Image 1 (cartoon, helix red, strand yellow):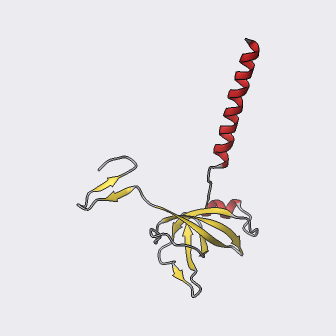
Image 2 (image 1 turned 30 degrees about the horizontal axis):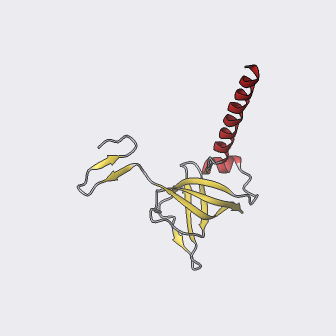
Image 3 (image 1 turned 45 degrees about the horizontal axis):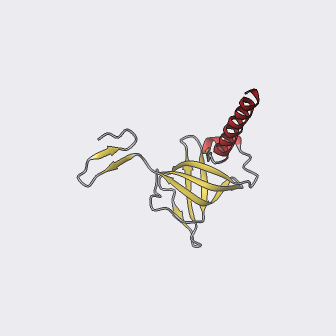
Amino acid sequence: MNKNFIFIFLGISLITFASVRIASNNTIFYYTTSEAIENVDISKSERLKLGGFVVSESISKTRNAQTNFTITDGNFDIVIIFDGYIPDLFQEEMGVILDGYFENEIFYSDDMLVKHDNEYISEDGEAYDVENYTK
């Protein structure tokens, strides 16, 4: 009886440990612009995820098909040079999460996720808040 209890306890402990370890490895964290300025050594070229809102009137295209823009969290602005696929929802004042690296205080990115709000407007003009499931 004691031997079986020990094996069961060890098995449950091992499964719990493995589940927590897998979940923590698959969680995606990103820095806001303030966190990146304050906590990340931007002179290194290590890859990280950076999130913020696209600053109005900051989007421009270069001749070599790169997109330049600035993101902010309301406190600090960071210049972005993006070379990759631009999602359809990308626009000014929209939240984005970028994957890339810093070089000379400029963030170079090649992967972008666009965050959208939780309000949708139907064809009849009625607004729905998806987060709260209300009209």
